[in-house]
Length: 306
Image 1 (cartoon, helix red, strand yellow):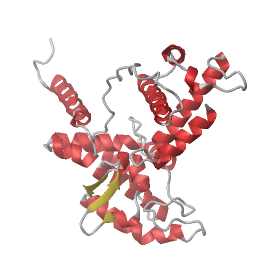
Image 2: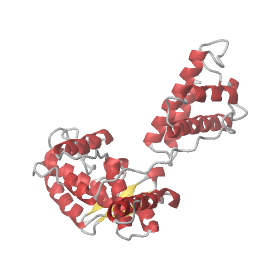
Image 3: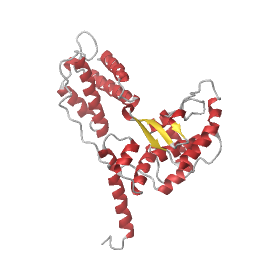
Image 4: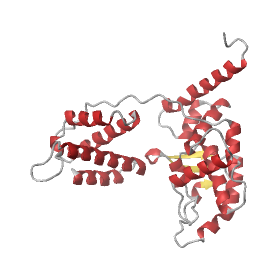
């Protein structure tokens, strides 16, 4: 099974609709599944200490899911089922097994939760954190301004190249999930900050010989910034500004959508800007906006309480 998982990983990398994050998660899930089978000595080959994929059936998969049910979140369990299902589809396609034992295993319903958002004042306070003129502070300000201005995912933010942003037209070309490209508007404030950063970006490029000349956002060594670094940047200014709510990079994307909706933007336009494949995903923000509206009503209306 080990070799089959590695072959599956290579096949995923060749597909155009699989993100690096999804591939990494799927392979991690499958290795965890294999390790469980090894520890329980399920489906082992007689001639070697490895799992025989042909011997894996629904009973074995359900045993594994039952083992992780108490510790894993529903979303994580659903992804693990998807990984196992996709893996066995790959094996069936290549004639390595006859049937897919995960076909009839349904995924758990995802937990219903509303994304966390900041108020407009809270967003402004966070964005005002990097107030200096050093290349790194200008980068931090530009990065957070663009995340909020255009509602970008962290992966989209770090994947941007200099040529993807047109500061004259106020537009950015973004590669989203499933490698789907979209054009998003960039607000005037974000454009202004980006221009200032681009004037100083060369200082970061020249610090080492390992710079990435294409990347828009660079780290202090001149390489492309990472997802983890973006989280650290947002966390840094949350602490610096002594904010009550602890934002994550994705909070800026949620805040972008909610503030647009509160300002009267239609749902279809927000869906387009966020790059959601389904309108039902975008509709979460309608529920969020309604919840906030009820909170305001309960606080302000003299007859809202008994």
